[in-house]
Length: 167
Image (cartoon, rainbow, N blue to C red; front, top):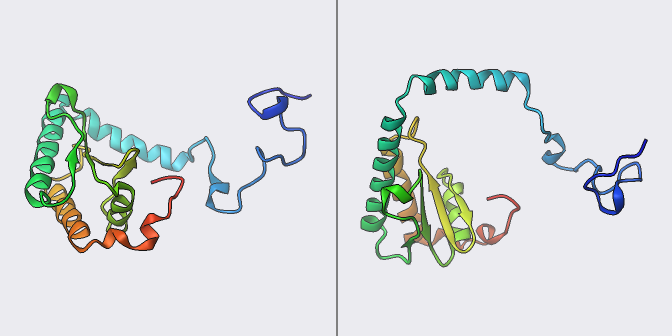
């Protein structure tokens, strides 16, 4: 039986087409089904979430993002960062985005310093604040690392300019 699906030219006909050939790296182990053990651990997190007031989470999310914006503007004002996130609460989620001319490189340098955010085109540094477990001190620490990366220009190191498929 031959299935026609999303593969080009009506489906893969060789034993290992480019659509079914195993990857040589860690991507070989990616699959669509989560292991049972890791799924069972999600239950613990859901138990905590079910005990939480969603309005309290929203208030903390806004407080975390307000603090982060204020700290970046105060501590990193000398650098070319432009707030891309709306200030209005009704238009803002739990992420804060700043634009920087070398956003990709800056984000890679931050990740190397254990400040995990992500990069979005064009030139956007995006920081997420999960209020259930992110502390206000984490926001302070992240801004200090951002300031250091910008002040020392460590983001200019060649390895931070190499584009990866995932940021």
